[in-house]
Image (cartoon, rainbow, N blue to C red; front, side, top):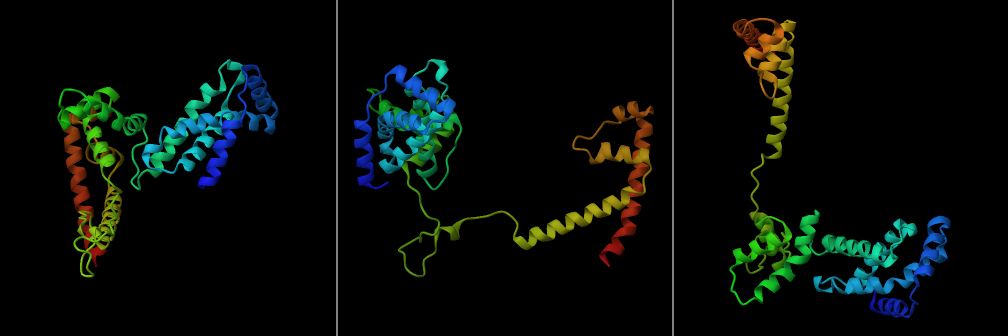
Length: 284
């Protein structure tokens, strides 16, 4: 939205007449029950000054005022779509939450190229940290950074480490990974060149995947040599995330734990023999 369009919107909003409670209720009913577009237009027009007022409270985040107003208008329309006139609540009271939420979501999406947290706690931290820090800094008592972070964390019900991370983000600016390091000469490297990645190289990942599939096929073939009881014991003792105990398996199978151990040992020997026969053929 350019400056001329914004001035026109503000002027129109300020000139729009206020709605009395009864008139507002009638218009809300017409919109809710009959989808009367004229009723919707009159409700939203009368409350655009609320959108502008709310948007002005967030102008310090460095985003265009026109964009904040537009997002607030989206929240106003959302409020109109959800408003229940029979609840005896003024539309402005109901719409305030939706307008604020829409503007805040827009700021979180566009304030930085690095997305921040979207939980209610992270939103409260993002929008209140500067205000709380300024208030604590104005006090007579000189507080250290760690003490300030602790006070803010306590006030907002978040962890101190989250406050420290958000404080660092708000006090810094975005930096491109393609920005040159050094004096910017043609021979200088970009920041991205200094990023370290401990993950395996692509060819190593492919080889690892092939090896995993091959070992899985070997094991699947070897398991076919076991009878039902041996297979159950091996699966529950060796292949389950939490291996069963000898006692529990013996109780389920109606045998002693020593007998379970013997069957397990025999089954493992069968698997070793089966795998030893498969390996030469598969490696050839």
